[in-house]
Length: 527
Image (tube, rainbow, N blue to C red):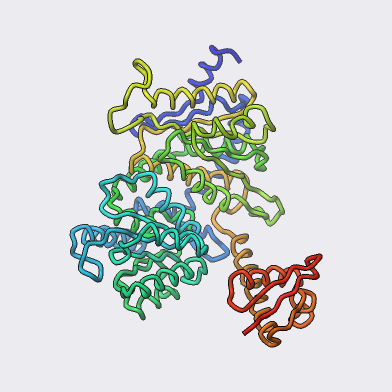
C-alpha cells in the first residue's frame, strides 16, 4: 500500500478524543473492509453484556459476585445507594487519612512523620499500585513507596535494605481480600519480624486493606493495627487499582487521586457509548479479535515509548491474561482462550527483540503507546534544533513503519503526557477493552479458576513437605531416597525429591547427598 493510500486509511481508522487528548490508530492493522459489519452481531451482544455488568448483574458466577470497578470512579452508577455510599465513604476516609499523615497529625510510633510506605500484596494487589507509583513518582512526594510483591525472602531483605534506618517511620499496608493469601501473609510476618527485631512496635504502623471480617481484618482488630480499609467483594484484584488497594498507597505517596479517578471516569463515558465509530475500547477489542482470529493466535507486544510506563506491560499481563485465559466458554465448551502479553519499552526494545519482530516469526501484533510530551523541564539540544524527545518520536514512528513494511500489524495509542488523569484514562480504556473482548469470544473475563487451582496445588506441595519433615525426623541420621520416603509417606517421589532438596537448602538440620541419578540422592536429618 503506497503512502497516499496509507494516509487515506489512517484518516478512516484514527479515533481521537479531542477533550481527553487520547487517540487510537488502527490503520496498520490489516482487517478487511467488511470486518466491522461482519462482527456487528458480536459487537451488539458485547455492548449489552457491558450494560448488564455496570448495572450490577452477577458477572462472577463462581463466587456469586457482581463486578463493579466502574463504580469506583463514578459511584452514581452503583446499583444501590448503599454501594454508592460505601465507595464514596471509603474514598473520603482514605484521603483524610493521607492528609493527616502529610500534616503530621498521624505519626509513627516515635512521633515523627512517616517517610516511607511498604505495600504488601500479590498479583492485582501489587501490580496496579506499583505501576501507578512508578509512573507518577516525583522527588516532591512526601512518602517513598516500597513493595513486597512475592514470597521471596531475598526480595524482602532487598527492600529492608532500601528502607534502612527509616523503618521506624515506615507505614506498612497489608493487602489481601480474604486475608488468607499466603504470599501476603508471609510478607506481613517478615515485616512484623523486622519491626520486632528493631524494637519497634509494629501495630501502630500497620494498616489492613481487606474484606470485612476476613482473617486479616480479625488480625488487625486483635493486634490493634492503626487502620483498616475495606476491599469490596465485588472488586477483583486485576481491576482493584482504583479501590482502597491502589488508593491507599497512592494517596499516602502524595499523588493526585481525584485526577486519577476523573480520568478513568471520563474514559468510561467515552467507551460506554454504543457507537462503534466513537468507541476506542471496542476498537481495541476488535483488533485483538482480528489479529488472533478470535482465538488468541497472536501475542500482544506492548511498547510504551516512555520510561514512566515501563511497568504498563506487567500490569496488562495480569489484566489481559488472567481475564481472558480461560479453558471453557460461557456455554461450557473447551476453547482454551487467551492472549499472551509481553513488552518492555521503546526505544530499548529496538536494540533487543524488535529484530525478531521485524524479521522473525510473525506470531504477534504490537501496541505502541505514544506520550506526546517529552519532559516537564527544558530539554537540551542533542543536535541543532533537535531534542531527545524528537528522537523518541522518530524511533517510534520509524519502528512502526519498519514493522508495517515487513507485514507486521500494529496499533498506536497516544496520550498527551503521563499524569494522574491520563493514567486513569489509559487504565480505564484497557479495562473496558478486556471486558468487550471477553464478550466477543464468549468467555467470562471476571473469574480465575486457574489461579485457584494453582493455590491448591501449592498447598498440596507444602503438605508433602510436612510429611517429609516428619519422616526424616522420625529416623535421625538415616539416609533415605525419594522412593523410600514415598513408600512411607504415600506421596509422589518427584515431589518428595524437590521438597527434600528445598529443606536441605533452607532448613537447619536437613541435608541432601547427590547420587548417580536423582533416584540415588539421599536425604537425612540430624538433630
